[in-house]
Length: 448
Ligand SMILES: Nc1nc2c(c(=O)[nH]1)N[C@H]1C(S)=C(S)[C@@H](COP(=O)(O)O)O[C@H]1N2
Ligand SMILES: [Mo]
Image (cartoon, helix red, strand yellow):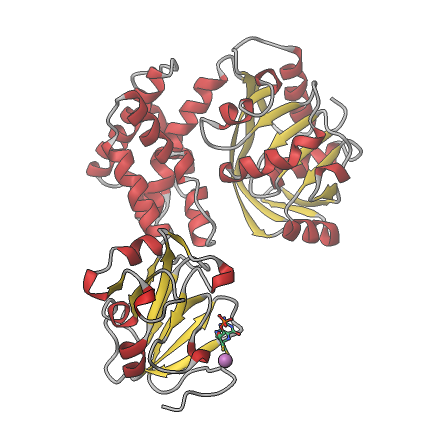
């Protein structure tokens, strides 16, 4: 396996990629996202560790066709980026390309096998505690080893070769005779401590400090093990105790989910506890604790959703709120306008009165204006609160579908009766309640 391509230079890919690049400068390249690529091109890829700091300058690109054709591809990006990465890699994959999967999640191999040959996949598990400090700079705190193995459980020369590659580069690598089980064992740990550290907003050790949580940890692992057993990967009866034992030497750490949450990145919840819930449902196994954790993690980490398809009400309110199209459709019927053509024959779609929207948050006493901001930040209209309440309607769907951008969607503010067309904000994504007039970039201010 002459050419090696590492996908991703995050906490996992950055650490292992840098070690491999140091040992095999001519053989290793990195497939990176544009932001990381810029950083690695200009400053290299740096690993800071208690045992030393080093920087490498690997070949890197954000299009795999710009890199040497890989014989081995080490997938080390987040599980939720898998499909996009596989699309991107398709042009450089041949009959004898080998994939090594280092990400969390149990269905990664199946998802690759749905696209490429199952025989091309070698299973892997990474044991490491590290963080991205900024793009291209990884801080490494603990561990830093891998386990690899054939999904079939057979021994093979390619697995031996991969293990050798890592060992020569100073990375401890174990050949697992049952890599599927090894993955499920790590899955147990992940399904316990990733969500718990987020829920308690604290280190792993804080989840060990209360007997109720220890009992909950046992229940999480039992649910995971029940699903795993039905998929023909039986785990030991004392699996939960093993998980707790492994945790002792890393008591002080947070987890990758915790770090993702704090950094505002999406979490891997759907590949971890969310996967257990989905598989459990398919197999008729009930997984109440994993279900609760999945819901809680989504509620905690996705709280501050923004984006062009989210309408946020903030400013002079006690607590900002965010609504998507589904949430808007569930607001009280008295505020809904099922058919906008009642105002004007050429208007289409379903709307919600701004009055109904502004009843959701508690407005600060004295709030008297409201500013509607377009998503692109290039247009805003400021109205008095009473104008907005009397005339404002947000059109949010047409025939049950999102309003297209060329019709001013996903959300368009209209003001039938106000007579100010310029107050019809297209692509509105933020409603800012204010005391006094706010930003207004309309070509002419409303007369009223
Ligand atoms: N986001 C955004 N919304 C906007 C504008 C704009 O430039 N950006 N122009 C406004 C003005 S001045 C008018 S007259 C109407 C035009 O809407 P139309 O393109 O549907 O005719 O959109 C209003 N809403
Ligand atoms: Mo306008």
